[in-house]
Amino acid sequence: MVREVVAEVWRLFIRRFWRTLFIVALLLAPLELGVAFFDPDFSSVAPSWWWWIGISSAVTLLVFPWVIGAVVHDVGVGEGKAIDAYGHTAGRLPALIISAVVSTVAIVLGTIALVIPGLLLMARWALVVPLIVFEGVTWRESLSRSNELVRGRTWSVAGIFVVLTLIMLAIAIPPLAAASFWLDNVLGAWLATMILDTVCVAFYSYAPFVLYRRFTG
Image 1 (cartoon, rainbow, N blue to C red):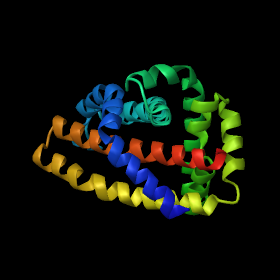
Image 2: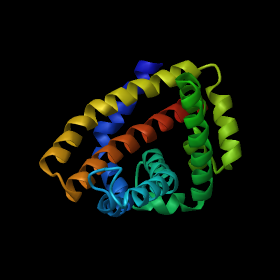
Image 3: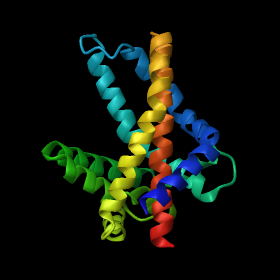
Image 4: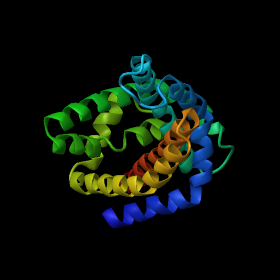
């Protein structure tokens, strides 16, 4: 299953990259530019460093769930204007945010304790966003149902995300390094972040969608 899912995710990435980039940029481009202004050098001694930590954490926990939900909806529907994906998922935003906060905290704690528990939790909750977006379930129901759907296939799903993460890094690191090297300023930090955001959102949206479609028919 790992090879088939990774191959399908890759095909979606190639076919829908520019549309996904547009969806991601609609919401994240201005926000990430603002974040870059606070600490473009990512220096822990900068006076604005703590502001940068707070704002970037807020963007990650409050905005990324909506972006991923919009991309999942867009790839599932496959038609209409790209901007409509945000309108269609606006009503799901509370569930998306709460589930993201709960799962992120649990996965981080599991990873700190030992890497494997965090990875397994990520696999068990892989279908949370598609369940919320397409079925309108609550955040509690999405965590529970995702756990049930993945049960018995946890290691395969975990393997999928490990492989996709390695591919994602291989894709993102060269342009990331180039943007940071050639544009050693706010613009460089912003471009580097947007490259990473787009690749991450694409992979971590397509994979849950593909798995959701496989496990629910």
